[in-house]
Image (cartoon, rainbow, N blue to C red; front, top):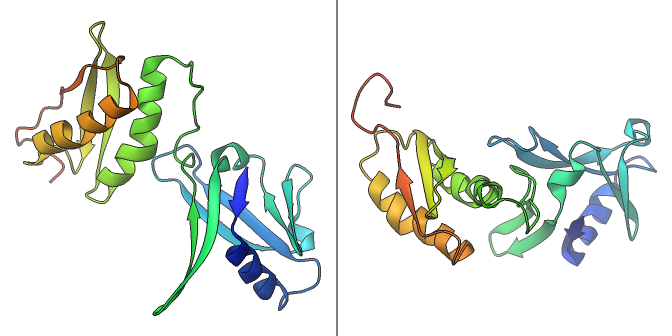
Length: 192
C-alpha cells in the first residue's frame, strides 16, 4: 500500500523517539477522491487508534491508515530527502485525488482517472481543471475546461500540446484526439 524509504523510516524513528512510548505515525488523505484532496502525516498516540485502522509494520514503528484513506493511498511513497539547504519529507500519492481504475475498465473511466490524477494537478496551479464529457465512437475525448482555464488565451496550446499528447500516449489505438466544448469567449461564465 505505502512505501516508506529507509531515510524516511530513520526520520520517523528519530521523531517518535521524542514522543510518548507507543506513539506511531498516521498517514491520511483529507477529501479523498476529490480534486482538492491533500495528504498528510501526523503522530498517532495509542489512544487515537481506531479498530478499523489499517496497520503497516515498519522497523521500530507502525504506520496507521484510516479505512477511508486506505484505497486512496495505494502506491503512495514517502521519502525524506536531505539537501544542502535543508531536508524535506515528501509524500507522493498518485491515487489521492482519484482511485485507480482497473486496466479493463471502460475507456471513459480510464481517461477520467488520468485527467484527475495527472492533468488536473498541473492545471490546478492556475486555478483550472478539465473534465471528460464523453468519448465519441471515433475515439475523440470531449473535454470541458473550468476555473482558471475558462477564458484563458492559452487553452488551445494546453489542449493540443499538453492534454492531447498526454492522453494519446496513455491510450494509443483507443483515443484519436481531443476536442474542447468549453465556451471560452468572455462573459458571465468566465472565471476572471
